[in-house]
Image (cartoon, rainbow, N blue to C red; front, side):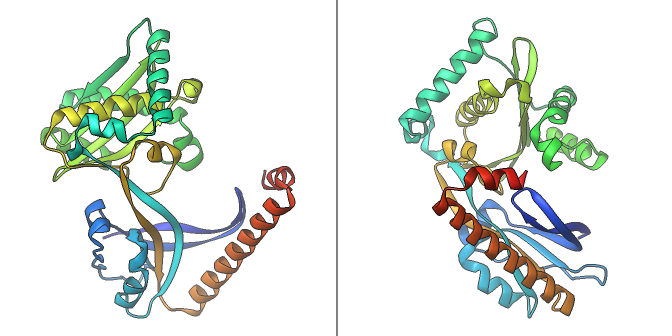
Length: 303
């Protein structure tokens, strides 16, 4: 296990007031871990690390995790529902589980994209090592223009470690890639890995120039059809975090938290106390803003 820097930001909305950096060991839980409520085993903590970052921990296991960490400071950094699609239900049952208005919007969006593209969808599928080379070249160019890359630094990676893993998975037939072209131009990508019957949405993005056509949803729908048709898969995992996109497609979810487990030092106690106080103050401010109808002023301040 290696440590990675994580800035603990003091911020209100999108405005960062200050940040303190901590070296943390990432401890991610799989979807199956979260569904079964399993606690992760914490690796040894070397002297350069300040603690752990545990992701997708079931919310009701928070106290148990802090107890298992043996006196470390537990700080909840984010709450969300980790969503998934039950692929065992079959395509027709899954489509019927989607809200009628959403289903109609997806169908309309697909037809609109097909119309712009000359009457049919231009979706390309990739899985072999050679195919994944072509996929990565185009998907990376989309990623560089995507919001995930520009704002969050979370686009499709291009470092040697990622590429090596991608080729190993392609050789083992455990990775899938999809590209959507609109009017001949690359518009959206989806990168999925497969382990033990679980298809995991590791990376996705789209060119904001096509945002009005909702290419991410059009591509996700096509990919879901492919995954249901493939057979032998149990679930599609949307991984950490939540969004309207995930809620539209998911059939279930687990209430999770991302939490930090930090060494019980005075500096860490003061830092987490200050972060907690700021978050509580911000929550009170948001509540007051809604009650007083001052949303426009608050948004201007955050910008």
